[in-house]
Length: 315
Image (tube, rainbow, N blue to C red; front, top):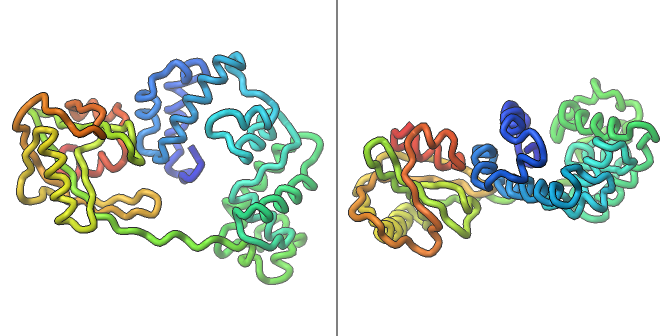
């Protein structure tokens, strides 16, 4: 959950997830929609799909237990080099160096390791430095400590060097240039996206669809379209709505904003009427379903769907 998601967002969600799926077997047996619903709002939903798939492999091939060998862990969906090493180290005491963003930053400054963060050569040098520090007993404690140090003190900007327990050993601080390490890739430029969404009511229920081939595949969303301008986005939404048997109102009922990765979406929300039932949707629409407000709270819906619902006054 903490991959690319802040601690503040994850707090509380982790406990609720474990209450719903207390062990590997329960997660392996769960429907994908149930796992996505429990993950709802955390974003990057491929993580949830990988977690469930990994649980199924563990339940089928490892009697529900995580293997201790980092090489075997890397066979699991969602387990890259860092994840495999971190689990082996933290859970089983393996002397496997693991470096995510925080550890990479601390070690780059401590040893003034040059290079671009994420580059292969730089990563190799960071892991080599980490390996020299790992104690024989409880090596995972060092990895966890370096993670905490990077998150709380050795921050990307304005590191609090006077509070750092490694300040007298840190070559980056002694050189007076800790923030130069490591070099970071320039952030991707934000792309502004015009969107349009349709909200149709039937009594207290609203219509959502599952769409394929998008970042939110398999999640329940309002009928939605994009374009290079609000006018084109609305025109594309009209075409989608027509194929779903909906007629769009002329004027927007509200607006919503949302960011996914480097995409800043500005969405106009339109109310719509149901003109006919049983319409054949476009091929990218996998399913459609009516949801009552209470059902939405337990459904596999992304944050974008919640924002659109609020803009239309549904919540």
